[in-house]
Image (cartoon, rainbow, N blue to C red):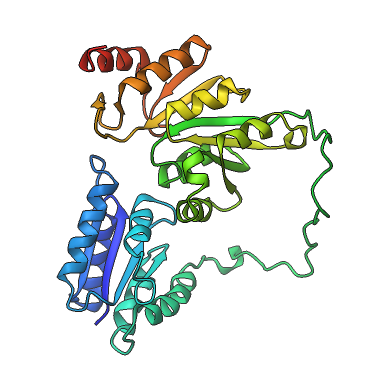
Length: 327
């Protein structure tokens, strides 16, 4: 029997599992994996690994996640590596999808068969009443204009200056909080991950471009390319959300001419040589030095994970880090 993992932000997974049990009865080989506010990606990964180990047949696993590009999806995407021939991930978890999965696995023996089957029931389960509110399919809609080739170098679009709606430092780069909360708040038409390392990592690059929310294009570029783009007058109509892995990358870009006046500090993962200064921020000596240099350049800091959070004091954070690092 195909094992099913329900992986979501908060207690949604346990709640929908309970709801499905009321309709279809308790089911074996089903595990709910939740991402709690005080947990991180590694916690989700560990829970998923434990769930797979508990299944009767760990070779056939279907992972149902709530949000494409969110932390549960990203960890499932990493876990599935090497198992693509027998495992599958479906995003957009809802109750019709789960009920169909329970029923279908009685006759279907593979996760791939289940994934193909339940995607349709998930979409069909979204209905509106009164039915007159259902969106009508437009016929003979005008096709979008296709530009023939790139604009010639030197062309000025708009005022010729790229607009930075948000520049964020986040070691996790593009994930659920960025893909939903920040894009909704800032309204970019393009997300640009600026990282030399990721730009040369085909797997991470692919995961990031696929995690972009609807209507927003995602690109991954090395720092030198971003510096070129910042000076290119052809990007005058671009509203960009920039993502950096480290303050060092942001500093290099700004010194190269990327006109960023404020940096949102989201999360910085802990590693050897760094000290935890908050639940989501860990800084090393190089990080502190980079932030101090950014401050000298006139860059301001907005320290918060999501728009609804209150802002933390960056000066106090740096002071605490320097004390613990004996700087």
